[in-house]
Image: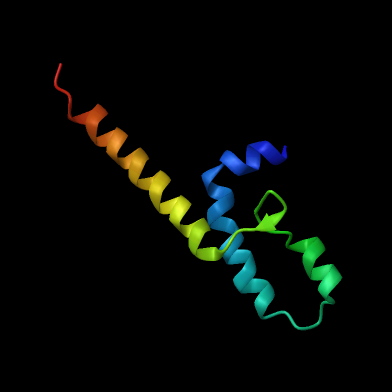
Amino acid sequence: MEALTKIEPLSYAVDPLLRAVFAHVNDLSAAMSRTLNPGMTWDGGRLPTVLELGVVIALGAAMLSLAIVRFSKTD
């Protein structure tokens, strides 16, 4: 399951949103916050938000380019 979340683009978009929400929750302990919001990790390290958003933008641009090519063909 962990491998599937690494290739799912939506996971990279949801994690920054979770960070923003949990940044404003003060009543949770650090351990509870890590449990509820583990974040996206590669090789044990948590990804920076900028990298996560970069992955979302790159995958979105690739899919948009593919769609433009596929739908612009005339049969």
